[in-house]
Image (cartoon, rainbow, N blue to C red; front, side, top):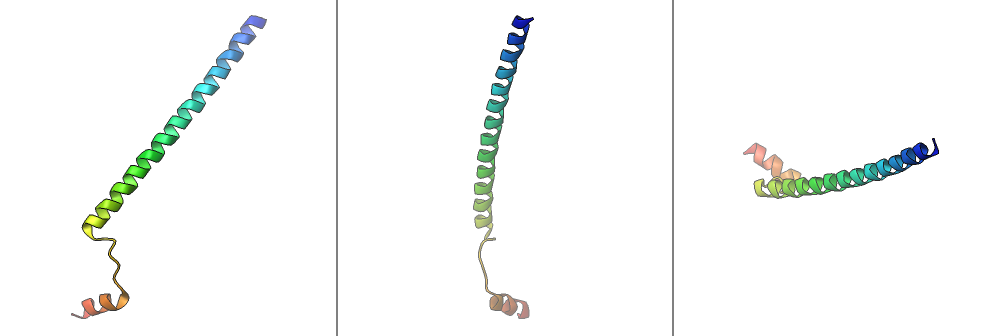
Length: 65
């Protein structure tokens, strides 16, 4: 019975270690993908000119014309 308990304990420790490793890999890969998507979105918005700020007076003048 004691040998069976040791096997279960070692199996549990390996499972916890594996779960931690998988969690860290998923966390890092998710952060990297988010960084790439954010970078691509910023580049795309710059390409379309969506980041250009115009003051309120210019917007009102454009509406009047």
